[in-house]
Image 1 (cartoon, protein in one colour):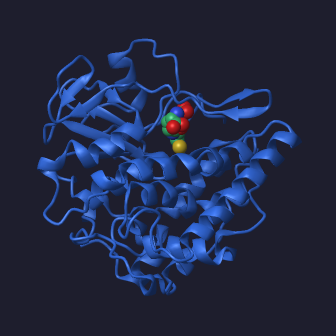
Image 2: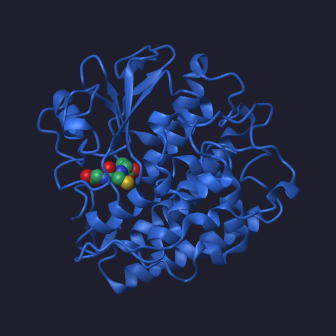
Length: 348
Ligand SMILES: N[C@@H](CCC(=O)N[C@@H](CS)C(=O)NCC(=O)O)C(=O)O
């Protein structure tokens, strides 16, 4: 089933990026700005979604788990909404609703657009606050500082902000969104255009990363988070389901080592649920996979192989430290990501 926000214009996939523009900020000064407050907001994600995965990784790297609670929707949504079908009684235990749509409708009755993740929901009112994930992820870094853990990295350092946004923008259209443009192309020519743009951008990124460990500066930044969530899904989904098949990630040596380096860093690999990732794409997009059959492979244990990227220098967390193990309540089941046990990244 096609996502509600999926649109074809002149046979090319067009992403709806008109978000609910509200923000949660340290010092609200105007309408549409909500106050940072620990225990007030619930981050709703689906583990499959690469955009939601960015927020999930940031929340973990920054140690915001106690400040912002987490709701995980089931991997397969219908045309109407993501649903909380993984929870007891198929109802989110905090929001008390079965569908994410209920939070959107509570704030905007008749909400006409896609019910998308990630979404931040006000636990008090049950109303959606924002689904503007590019802003939300930056705000986790810059507005929630008072609630960051000791040793939290600076994912959006002042001195690199311009470059981080420039680099992330450079691969957004061709890579992050590019895989969708390949997968949902309605005409051969638009597919080929997207495919060519995707792989030439990946080649350029390989070149950039050949001699530097991270995309910007010497430590992990928001730019790495934004590239990683697409690379993590590449061989499991985009190579087959979306026909991005010039090369697998495992056949692009620099990017593959870069992606494994991040995967093996606490906060990245331990948020990846390969079972849910595959279930979501293959069983939700029945227009491009009408049988709904979910492939068994590839074997994700290859993510645990050595990458040797530490030889390039850099330090993942700058002056900070890695996050501790993921809590049992938020852990990806071992059978859904068999690389984690090999890497000693299982839950505490
Ligand atoms: N429209 C936003 C939101 C993120 C998004 O598309 N999330 C997908 C899952 S990966 C979603 O929630 N789709 C459900 C829908 O569109 O109805 C974007 O594309 O950046």
